[in-house]
Image (tube, rainbow, N blue to C red):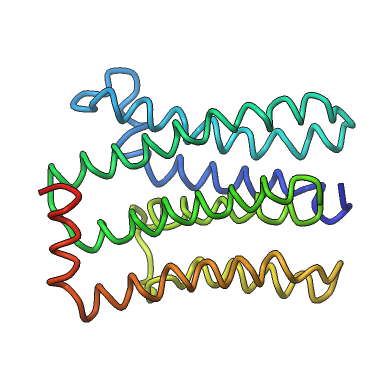
Length: 217
């Protein structure tokens, strides 16, 4: 693994900490009774925690030259990720049926689509370690909005945190290995999904309403 990415586990650990802090009041702080929390939420939370833990563990295994175990865990995600995506969709559906919110509906579409896209790219480039590692880094983006949305913060335009992360990583590459392509692709994927959905939110609410009815009506 490239020297610059040997400590990427710290980044993933920071995201895990962000998720814990953001959901402490509504989930983790309710331990052990978890009063009012549906079983589906527990399974969803477990899969997200497993995914973030895998992101932390996998680079460490490479650094320690435990490549065989790294590959076994990587192949295990072929079955794990589809289950995780299904749970993401089911939790989003449950939330919308409980309280309809067209904006969150579009954010859910964006986040699930981003996760599937970046994971698929990481697997497609699994034989190119430099690209594979960078696309795996991008799989943290779908977890940013749900976490930040539950924290007190200065209002930012939609999509700003994700663009700042991608832009920061592109700037980092400018002064290090200069492997821009994965992040340029990631920028294109993000904008290609975000801009149409944001446009719908601003100008196409009747269409969004119809989309919601098709999914949940």
